[in-house]
Image 1 (tube, rainbow over the protein chains, first blue to last red):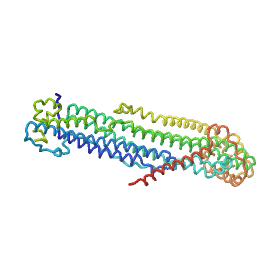
Image 2: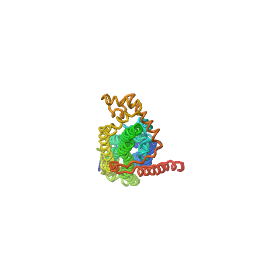
Image 3: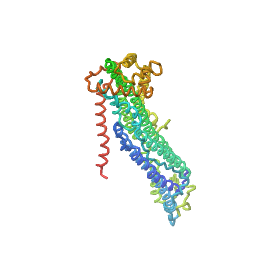
Image 4: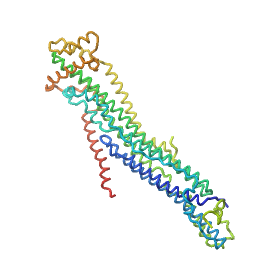
Length: 381
Length: 161
């Protein structure tokens, strides 16, 4: 006969805590994901390419975290139910031995807080604002230089100098800001994992036996799973950060290339004037504009690179959605607990035939003994 | 290193697989950035070509040349400044005055002139893009992306509360 120890009121209190923790704390992570990490109202221009994926991914993970919250809350419910079943078994055993035994306790007699060292962190997400569009500042000086000579470039090439940079529209700091929101989500998940692991260890102190061992394995699995899950929002932040960084570098270099165009065209404009002053400048001006086209074409290629890197980041953000389905870490209440509840119910049914069974109590198996040992234990008269 | 998931899934490997195409693209961007940096460095080191320098020196001797050109040409001849300084806006007020005069003169006499478009040089064609195609493609992409993004907000308003 295996030995089992359980402090029923404390197990029940831990269950209550787990339920509240799941519904409120883990549930808040789901809401933060949808409301903050999935915010796209401030995205426009080329950011429109990636905005739907950011929104959809936040919705997918928000729902996934809803499921996690349900699982954690259900874990609490299962612990409470288990504690109740232990109480009923003890009452049944007591009544089997003494027909006058009555239950005077109730699960509400185990007050919140009696679960011992319950530990819980609350990580609050903040609203991360965006910076004023940095593109404006980067191109300010260039725009001043363009005004006097753009007509020269247009006359010789049919293009306007700022065409490439005008095409790169969008404030990439929104990506950084959204990445910080995903990092908040990651911190929340990691804290949930820490809390689950800590409190699983705390439950160990009030419950042991076969079912408790299974619960321990489940709790460790759930806690580690939450830690693993916390890496995904961090990876999303990384992807958005990589895009923002490259976008900024490409934009800056596009401006540098166009400044090279401006430099060539200024020489071309001076050559045109010199041609007017001494009669032979048009050919030199044309040649300078021809040379300027090399930097101009390179600037246009940057436009394509910006589009391609946005599309690659877009695919990555969409790809993360699939990872939400890969984690089956806790899509159901642990079977170990379910099994224990069933087993205890069966046991109560069997005890209904006492005293016939009193001559053979060995089948009681995991019936609570110490420190919860019978009618004198808390909750049972 | 991310921990393995409870189901034995290597979270790090799964994340790496998702990020791989993005990393390939950012590598491509980094190579393009380096190539353009080298191009710009080479362009900056060239300075104003001999043909243009000779043209400006000759124009300075013209009776039609403005005072600004004559003054700058004298300083260049004296070795005080170079034509590169003028076009790099490092030649002080005299250099700025010359550029103002030059741009104004060019505009006055050539803005309405019928000048042929220049040939696109091979070095530009080697970049491998057509500016008009890029512009059209980007415009199309932006319209489609805007539509897809707007749809999110339309759905939000249409969904029953």
